[in-house]
Length: 267
Ligand code: ATP
Image (cartoon, rainbow, N blue to C red; front, side, top):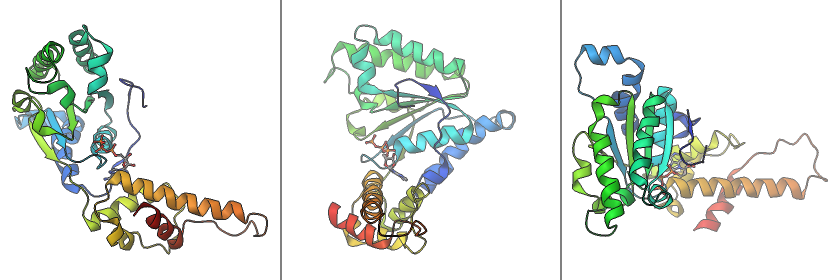
């Protein structure tokens, strides 16, 4: 599902996301339940927010959350990388934007995810020139047509919200701003636990304690994923090294010693 624009329901679950409970609650209210119980939202005349901007340092779960929202809602997911949209269709990027929204409507409920959205929405007249200008205008037209795009939610992600054109951040466009921070020490533990779901981590390992280690200070979710991978690699190497001398009955798991070695490597 890495191909640009590929449409499917992603297989990322909320359990794969460590921490970020606040964001989960917000998206539950604004998107997931709205897709699951549309009549109720209509009955209560709730005005829906359909555009969101996730901002914050790289590797902290913006893409992951957007996918989990789609999975939870049973919605299709279209992943667009801002710079690619800009460069791949030079001269035709307005058409590309129109086509995208039209495709999203066709496969609604759908989440349209714009990664590195700042590339599309840099303050007009500054960096991008006329290509960005025209693309941005088309994007605004589509965003403003929210009434016609029932069941299509737009989520943008950026590490540099400050360079974005203010016009895009107005209500009804990427109107709801949500900060995705670096994890706290406890959240690092939660992220490690989420990542451990798919790895044979030994029950004796205290992931919360590892998350609180000084050496893990300032690590992002992506860094923690790399840490988990290093630990798995250490365990695997140990297994392969002594596979002849040890019995096959030994359960091979990732142990605290492997995490310690991995932490030593990254710090
Ligand atoms: P960027 O701004 O660089 O696009 P991002 O905020 O979109 O980054 P993701 O792509 O969601 O970050 O995260 C990269 C990887 O890091 C994920 O695939 C996952 O393995 C891990 N990761 C990041 N945050 C979390 C989290 N909160 N819980 C579990 N894993 C995480």
